[in-house]
Image (cartoon, rainbow, N blue to C red):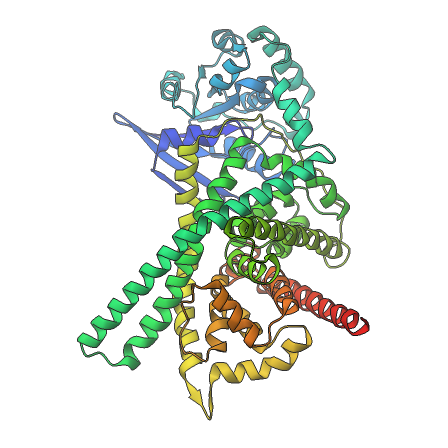
Length: 615
C-alpha cells in the first residue's frame, strides 16, 4: 500500500530536516513539470505501508505571488496527495499558521507538525498542542527535527487521518487565497489561546545581534570581517593538505610510469595519459579539494547560524538601486564556493529578467578554483616576507579587498544590464530573517562535504582529465620549429602585452577554462618550455621564474584582476546553458566578464604607465 504525502511549510522552519529524517537516503530529485524549480521526493516504509514524501518548495502562502507558492498550490490542488503535513516553527507560530489555514481550505487531510520545540523551550515559549488540535480539528504533532525527537509520530498522525475521498479535495477560488486578512486574524486568535510567552522579550538576543549584523555601518563591517576570516582560515588551512596531496599524486605518477616502462609500453602511449590527463587531474584534486573541504563547511555554518539572509538584507538596497533582485546577494554568495552552484541557485529569483541578470553576473565573484592563483600572486608580489602567519593574514586581507571589487563590478554590470538588454524595474520580495540557531557541526560537516564539496569536485574532475590530454597534445606536438602551444602564445603575445599581460598568461587562461586551478601551472610549464605541468612547491622559485620572464607587480595585479574578471569555467558554462536553455545567453555570460576584464586590465596598465612616465 503506497500513500503520497506532501510536506509543506514556510522557509527556515526545518521542513527539509523533517523530510531527511523520514526518508533517509531514499531520495531522488527532478524538475516540476514545466518548471525549473527542483522537487525532492523520498520514500519511508512502515510495515506493509510505503509513504512517498514530496518536499514542496518553502513558501509563506498559496497566493501564487512566486513560483514556489504557485507550485505548492497547484500540487496540493491538482495532484491530490493522500495527506499534507504542514511544518511550522514553534518560535513564530502565528506567521506559519497562515499557510496551514490556507491549505486547510483546499484539503481536509492535513497534519500540523510544530517543529523546533527545543528552540521554543530555550526562549520560554510554550505551545499547547492539544488545544491547537482541538481548535483546528486536525492531528497536531510536536517535534525537534534536528535531534529526531517526535518525528516518527508524524507517521502515526497520518495513519490516524480518516480516509477521505479524492472528491473532497477541491480547488479553492484564487480570490479566497488572495484574501490573506481572514487567515491572519484567525492565526492570531489561535496563538492567543494556544501559545504562552513566559518572557516578554524572548527574542531580545536576536534583536541585539540584528542591530550588529544589519546595521548601516556595522553590517558591512561584519560582512568584511566574515569574508576575511573565511578566506584566511581557508588559505592557511589548505596549504598543508594540498602539499601532501600533491606529493602523493606525483609519487603515484612515478609508480605508474615505472609500471608502464616495466610492461614495455611506449612513451608515446603512456605519456599523454599519465603526464597529461592524470597530472592535470591530480593538480585539480590536490589544489581544489582542501580549500573546498574548508570553505564549504564554514559557509554552511554561517548558513545554519542564520547569517546569510542578513547578507541579502544588507545588500538588498544596493541591488534595488541596480534594478536587480536582492536575492541575487544569496546566489552571489553561493558563487564563492562554485559559480555553477551559484547559477543553479538563481532559480530562487522569481522574475525571469532579474534571474538572467544574476546568472550573467555570477562569475564576477571568484570560486574556490580561482583562490589559489590569486592568493599565490598576492603573496609573491604584494604581501612581502614577514613570516608565514603574517603572510597568510595579509594575503587574506588583500584577497578580501579583491572580492569587494568583484562585488562592486557585479553591482555595476547588473545596473548596466538592467538599463540596456534587460530593462525593467526591481521586483519586491519577502525576505525572512530567521532566528539565530547554534549550528549542528557534525551534520554541517557531513552535508557540506557530501552534498557540496564532492559534488563540485566530481564535476571538475570530469572536465579536468580531457583538458589535461588536450594540453599535453598542444605542448608536445611540433609544427615547424615550435609546439602548437608556443605558436598560439606567439600569436596572442602582442595583444596580451597591450593589456599588461602576455601571450603565455592569456593562453593559460584559455586552456584553464575547464578548471581554473591549472592556470598557474600552465604558465610555469610554458615559461620553462616543458611538455608537462610542473610540480614546483617552492613559492620563491615560482617568483623567480615569473620575474625572469618579465613579470612585475603590474603584471601580477593584472593577472589577479583578469582571474577575477574573465569567462566562467567550462562547468559553469554548461550549467548556464542548461538553466537558460539558450546558447545565446551562455555566449553572453562568457562575453560580458571577458570584455570587462580586458577593459579593466587595459585601463589599469594605461594609467600606471602614464603615472610612472610622468613621475
